[in-house]
Length: 85
Image 1 (cartoon, rainbow, N blue to C red):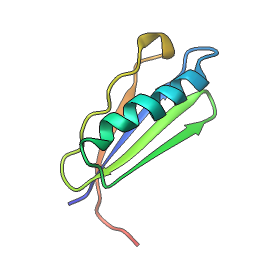
Image 2: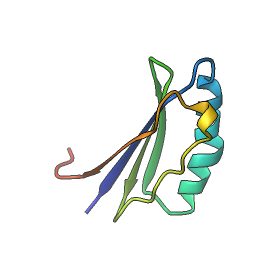
Image 3: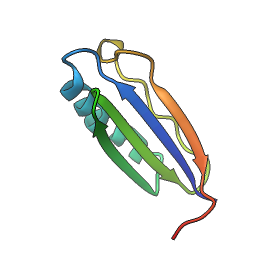
Image 4: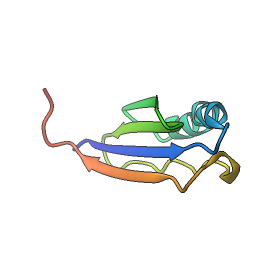
């Protein structure tokens, strides 16, 4: 069974680059030690940073960034793969 974890954060005003850097330099290395099958960092309009990680079992939690980087609390969703083409 493959699980995916989506983690999305909206940056505080003027902090999008800092939040992206934190995700790349802090969150991703922390997740690598837990052994995801794949991890992807994305950005979107509205100063949003998104991490998607795929796991062979239960996903590891993404740590929270420092509060001063955030415009609102982080959103998290877990999914279970049902079909891949």
